[in-house]
Length: 176
Image (cartoon, rainbow, N blue to C red; front, side, top):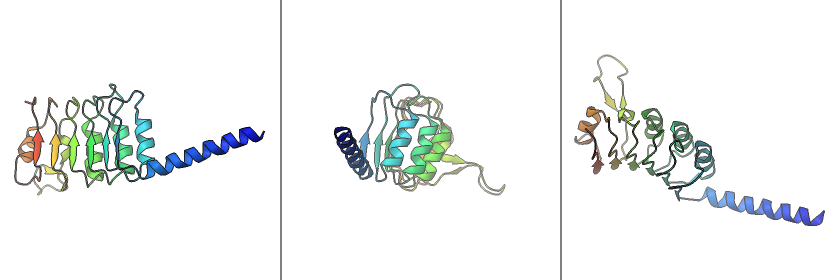
C-alpha cells in the first residue's frame, strides 16, 4: 500500500532527525522523569555523543543505579556535569567507574544517596610502600555535593578540605 509506505518513510525520517538531534545534544534534564531506568540511561548515553550535562535527579527509587552509571561512563567520557541526587540505588561501585572514566567531570551532585560512602574516590595502593589510601585523579572536579550521604568516609572529608583537592565547593551538610 502506497499510504503505508509513505507513512513508514515519514516515520523513518523522523527517527533519523531525532537521532541527529540527540547526537548533538549538550544538556539534558530527565529530572523527575517517570519511567527512567538504566535502560533509558544507556539509550541516552549511546545516542547523545556530545552530552556534557545530565540531570537524572529526583527519580523513583531504583531508576538510577550502578548499571546506568557504568553505561553513562562508558559512552559519555566527556560528561562535565552530573546530578544524580536522591538516587537511592547508586553505590560507590558505580560512582568509582564514573569518576575514573569521566575525566572532565567538574560538577557532581550525589546528595541524598544513602549508599554513597565517598569511597569511590579512594583506591587501595598498588604496592605496600604507597600511602595507605590514594585519591582517584579527578583533576577537573570543582563542585561536589554529597550532602545527606549519611556514612561518608572521614578520609574523603579531610581530602576534600585539603590543598590536594581542586574543589571550590564542597557540600557535606547532614553528614557525621
